[in-house]
Image (cartoon, rainbow, N blue to C red; front, side, top):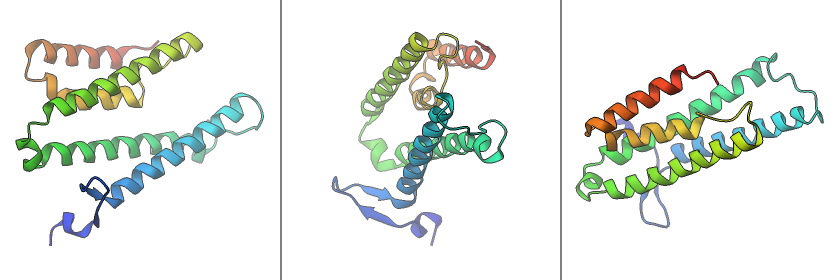
Length: 161
C-alpha cells in the first residue's frame, strides 16, 4: 500500500476524485484567513486591542496561513501535472486560462490596494506567489519567458517599497 492509498478519496459531483485531506486543509486555511483578517481589521479600527505583533499566536498565525495555502497549492499542482492521464489530454490551455484568471485577480488586488493604501499596497502577496509558481511551467520553455520570470523574482525579492 502506498501513501496515496491511505488518503481517503471520494467521488464528487463532477465525477472527479477529490482528496478529502487536501479539501479539509484548504477549508482550514480559508477559515483561519477570515479569522485573522477580522481580528486585524477590528484592531486597525481600534474596536479591539489585539497584540498582533507582540503575541506569539497572532504573530505566527499569518505564517501558518501562508504555509497552508502554498502547501495545498503545491500538492494540487503536483497532482494535476503528474497525472499521466491528464497530461495526455493536453490540458495546457486549461491551466493557462486558470493562470490568467489568477494573474488578473492578483493585479486587481495590487491596483485596488495601491489606490486605497498608496503607502502600504500589496505588490507581492500570496496570490501573486501562487500565480508565479502556477505560471512557471508555461514560460520556462521560452527564453524570454525565462528571463521574465527571473527578472520578476529578482525585482520582487529586492523591492522594499
